Image 1 (cartoon, rainbow, N blue to C red):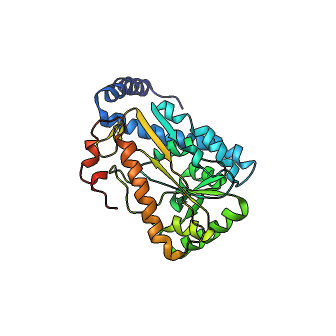
Image 2: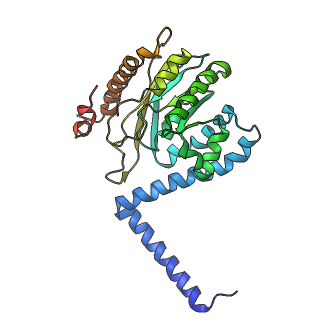
Image 3: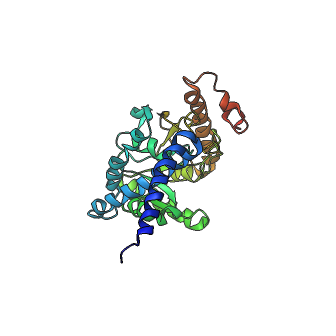
Length: 287
């Protein structure tokens, strides 16, 4: 079916309007730029997942596929002008299973995670991610462990299976113990699942801290510019000999050490760090 001349004119006018409006919004509206950047970020990840799926499918569901996802995602930081600095990578135990715990600020955590992700390490993620289109399928093929946080019994069962997998298949897992994203430039109280897992398997905990994104990213202010993120790997915390009764104290101790480092690296090179003293900032965090 051919378009009548008026339709071609309308399409041309729409194209010219977008050609003018989009660049204007990009340069004149920080909020519009924020939404454009986030839309591209999420869309690009979904597109990369489509490319990764056939390659990962050759092995089937396998933790080694995480290397493919990491390779395909590493370049994203350059697209956004984000410089990721990793320190303390030598603290990773060289040849044993362990549980990584990291603070959770936004979907941009993926950039820091891919920069430092050790071999045979997979994240534990909420089950909803499994239904996130191509990204969910790619994550499943890469061995990502999904848990339903609303069904406590199922989550405990999955954690018990993960503890056995750690020991029998030489796998490491990455957990965000805050349980949800925290956009306030602080660190939420830790849930204890990751620590129960480490104690049950008697494997060390490796804390990883990502500095605050507030100098270049703020969801509330609709701000997303270029900047620097520091990722600090802390010395492993042993769990040999600990029991479930020791988990609360263990979680508090690890959170305290991570929060101390978070405050240090989030103010490093940024002056007084006053933004950390805002309500909800690190200055008001309870240990």
